[in-house]
Image 1 (spheres, one colour):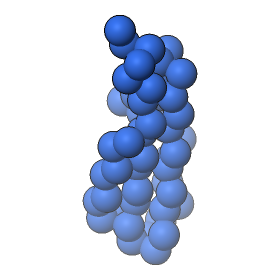
Image 2 (image 1 turned 135 degrees about the vertical axis):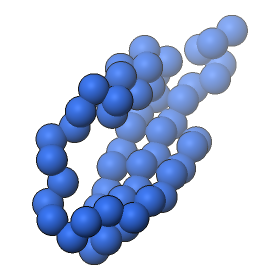
Image 3 (image 1 turned 90 degrees about the vertical axis):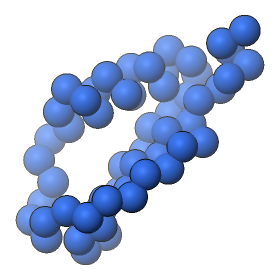
Length: 55
């Protein structure tokens, strides 16, 4: 599990861009998942990868 936290504006988030779409595709390819959350001015990204699928 990888978790990232960053600050962002208080405005609503725009639709996912190329970067998040690519991360989601890789996570799904390895039977994992991606979760994003916005809480006030904080943005959270969690990526779960099944590393046993890499072997």
